[in-house]
Image: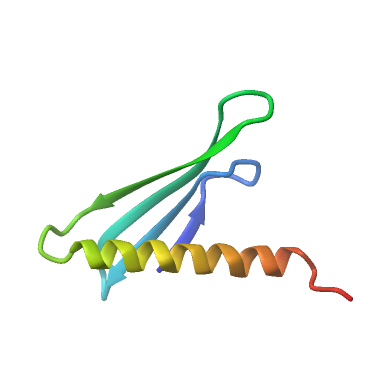
Length: 81
């Protein structure tokens, strides 16, 4: 699974799941602002292979996305004492 950002200042990211050289799933992730204080996550999944995109694979991919986000947050926090 790979993650790419739309830009440095944007919260929009795309997570892609590959099988060898073929892209199976693409997860689009972003934060949407509804008011000056309320934000919500917006997640959409695009499937490119109808045979390979089972519901279990989608759930596992979303879990991997959360693990990648946690890893990036831990790396950006500095982890200092």
